[in-house]
Amino acid sequence: MSLLDGLVVAAYFILILFLGFYYQKKSKKNIEEYFLSGRQMPWWLAGVSMAATTFAADTPLAVTGIVAKDGVAGNWLWWNFAFSGIMTVFFFAAYWRNSGVMTDAEIAELRYGGRAAKFLRGFRAVYLAVPINLVIMGWVTVGMSKVIEAAFGWPKWEVIIILYLITGLYIIFSGLWGVVMADFFQFIVAMTGSVILMIYGLDYVDGIDGLKLKLIEKFGVDHELLSISPFASGKIVLSTVLTWICLQWWASWYPGAEPGGGGYVAQRMFSTKSGKDAVYSTLFFNLAHYGIRPWPWIIVGLISMVVFTDIGDPEMGYPLAMKKFLPSGFLGLLSVAFFSAFMSTISTHLNWGASYLVNDVYKRFMKPDKSDKHYVWISRGAVFFLMASAMTLSYFFDSVKGAWELLLSLGAGTGLVYLLRWYWHRINAYSEISAMIAAFIGSIVFNLAGDFSFADKMIYTTIFTSAVWLSVTFLTKPESTEILKKFAHKVNVHGPGWKHYVEDEKTSIKYITDKLSLWILGVVLVYSFLFGVGKFIFKDYVEALIFLFLFLVSAILLNKKMKNISYF
Image 1: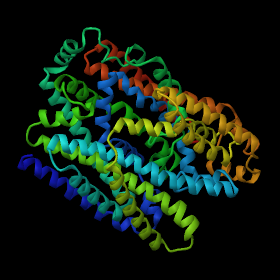
Image 2 (image 1 turned 135 degrees about the vertical axis):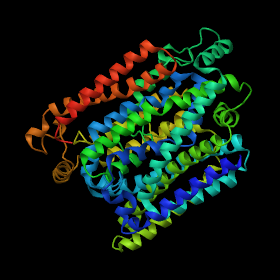
Image 3 (image 1 turned 120 degrees about the vertical axis):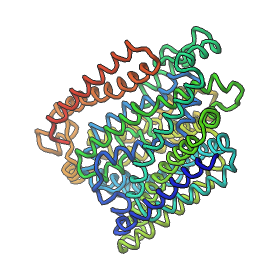
Image 4 (image 1 turned 90 degrees about the horizontal axis):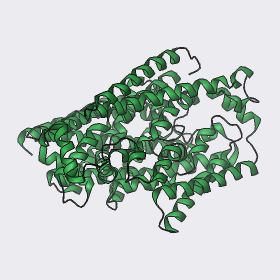
């Protein structure tokens, strides 16, 4: 790196540390300030923070690997989660905000009662805060280490430790305010860097026309690498396509795309000012996450396929492109973009994981009557514990895409429980507990039992998990009327599934059909924008205009319909 590159990187770290210390005064009041910004976050800032968190250092690398294996259509592995994300916007976001809880684990003792609810809250908090959270930070760290090694040739683990220490330092003191304000800056820098790399990469291969020509020269005139339809790709078998489109998005738990919302997405919804703000924040997040971000990564992934022909790990194509294409100064900017993406994700997971350990374990079961100051200091200690654990575990990871698939299989079949608990009173604490245990057992069994494809594992685990939790639901007693009425009143639920527990007018099927129409419009909005931008980049202008027209129409209709609905 040149002196100019080094100055750009140094300026970034100074700014991040300044933000952390600037917001420490707010975060030290109590844990609601520390973990939820006092529930005063503007919707747009919450939405940007969600988008920044899901843009990690591993994401461009994973997309590069996906494109190398299955072409553009391989991205349906994660594009399919837009169905679930938009469902969260209109079916669940306002419910989450109305609940008034601090974590999604805490909802267990609002929705359910008795010892089973207590167990579920504590177990889910520890499960998400430690093993699941550490796995996520592990694969994010692997992605960052590949960038450091390939693009700069630096000693990767020394740099990783420095990044963790800087991230931990500003998060320990600043809490969620520091996270989201840094996210805002980091998202802009990360997206700018990605677009700049795409522009320089295209210039290297003589533009889109040159890229298309080189793909034909290497893969033949009949290649389907640029197709956005997985049904058109001969590389992707039908069972995999059907799993993505018809099963995965609603059946499997995945961070940032949980069916019904949850995790750090729920944390951002809790931090907004109202249920309506929660709706708008998650809508913006889904549009940014699926519609705005992917194409710079995809284009660079395609370029790397024709430029780097002898690399064993296709995920390395992205950092190698950084090193090859970028001139002095811009390499520093893209380095900052990757540092931003990495630190944004890690900071969120440290803060989010600590919220479980403090709110749902320490305060709930161990020390329930301590001062606000005491809990803030314990929160800072929890952040440090998770940081040290993540650095240690990260050493044993080597594949980003493999970790994605592992986490998807571990949650296969649980998604439907998380969707239905808001709309069907019969779901109880044992439904959730049995679903989590069955999914874990099923994923292990089907991973060890035979040489199944990823799609087969998802299908078999989902069937097994669903059979278990449905059986347990009907073999156990429903929650008490008192618990259900309290939950329904607090959250302001609607729909026929609550007809015995809320006012009659709230049980109308109209509330469900209204949300379904919003969901359909939202799905069209996201996918039409995603595909319209892609077709425009590839110079397929007629198809681009059709998709962008659909985007415009869906945006107008969605805006009009949302203004006429009052129960958000």
